[in-house]
Image (cartoon, rainbow, N blue to C red; front, side):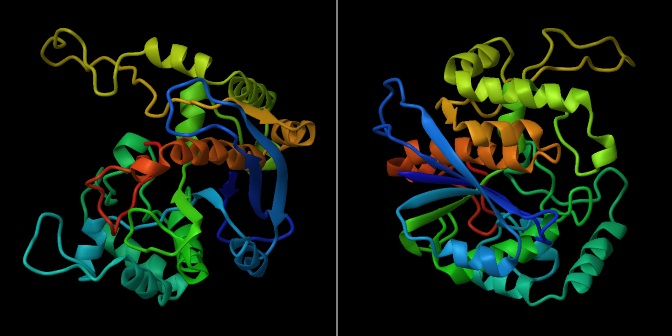
Length: 323
């Protein structure tokens, strides 16, 4: 099976393109037996949306994990009268394609203004609405338009996936079953491998030796595979675990470690050129694409059971695979 990891940008150009990591998986799939490594053999830079649109028509079979939001928070969409509030019944939602087409019809400046207006009337500390997947994935709200500009990424990317006719599990879009697109988030894998150590920045002046060391650690962890990831996971308490006794009245609650939400299963075998680019790229784009390959491999192993997506996911919001 061909697996792809896609590090997306809302403004592809020669200086910062959409990066596609391509890999080959040879494991049987649904077994608990030790899995063969996934070989990541190439990195491709797409410097325009036209190039991305053409790439989406790549013949299958393939499974890709795309680093861009596939859906907006239901709370936001309900405020805009695009769907029902969560928990309401008696009327059908419009469906993911209709929402995406409506979102794509907004000019980018108008989209940002509408997002700002939604936040402006909300209290400090609760400015953004969240999708259900944000908690377990640890991801930014998909409605954020800056730091990171993920709303612009969705505005540019999700309509292209719809037009390309790919299969979008969980969203009610039964496209080409030989081209499967899933929402990925490289931060989910990165935290499982090295915690929250920073490893990238687009600002060349801020790229540091510390970032480079973190990328080395991450690449080595990907190459060692599941044994290291499992050991890290077992050394930490489960997500949501709390102290055995409450703190004294008035005292701050102690920081609670969280077990990584994602555990690496496949060992990645990086071809030398891919490995070196992951280490040298201070923006992290190449490494993020490879991290998305790990998510695509995780989902492919679960292809016969819904790609590992929750059975009760919101088909308008979508879900980050592996969370």
